Length: 256
Length: 154
Image (tube, rainbow over all chains, first blue to last red; front, side):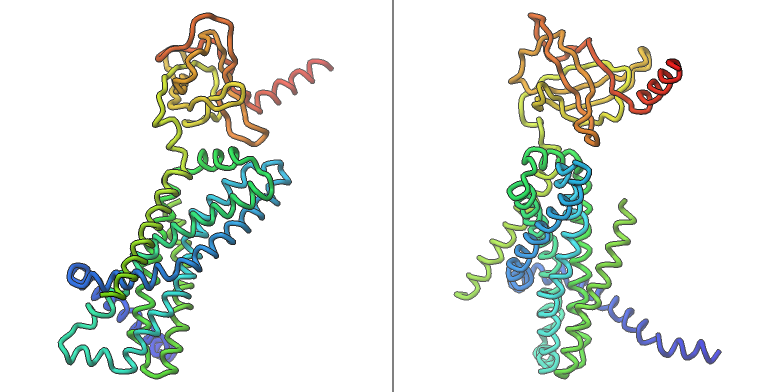
């Protein structure tokens, strides 16, 4: 019994955090429609912060990830005289796995940390309490716009990453390694179905929810000290990475 | 409002870029856009065995893709596979005694329908049928025949 008691004491904090996070998630959802209508300009500003400002890192990463996929696919398929299939390999990898996952990880690093530290600092400097004093709901003013901005930005960022990645693979395979351009695209188009693209989009939507929720929650839940905000920011990246990778496996297993 | 304009402009550009990328992914990477917007006519061919031919496989003549397979059905009466394909209307001078065979693109490639021109003065039309066909080569049958022949020679 003592063992069970100790186990509960050590794990109850984790369970409590998880429950609080879920409640926070429902709060965010509850205020989402009204925020979208009444404070639309705030949501737009957050789409700009999370999405438009991430576009450079997304495009550069996409280009090189696509390029290296093209390179690896070519080098290994060449052994079987099947280098025309480079397009299939790079395309499927990008559309279904690498695109959504790496975009979510980059998003956590670029936009998630910014959200967490911003909200954490607002909390540390009592801005959230001040809002409540002025009868402004911080849910609608601060949390929900950031949450929605992340959700809207993620699928679009993923699409941009995947598209640039495909062009990167095209550049390496076709321009550098002389794979026939017709064979490259035709094999890819013949092999890929619309369902495969939808799988990637589904993943990016789920990752958008998870990454935004974790970033906003960690800021909200942070200890309002310089150290606490720093820790919360770290936790955002770590939790998002783990959650995204586990969910990726689960979604793939479910949709396959 | 001055500073808001730049934010709105940036957001608008970002959204347009994202939607453009989504459009690119759904139309350019999948094979659904082929021969759906062009004028086509459809012909049928009966095969004893279609092997692993699939819908949307290319129909090629002299190695150039001129159409797509749109349907593969089994005719329970004649016990044959009926392959329906559409061919780009620009190529409407294909003799009606041309023959269709199911070929494989490379050793590991997918299967496609290859047309070989005949010498007739009449051309294939919409709803027409290609009567001379050659089935897919099934590797197992080939090996089986080879083994039997090898034994018979001994």
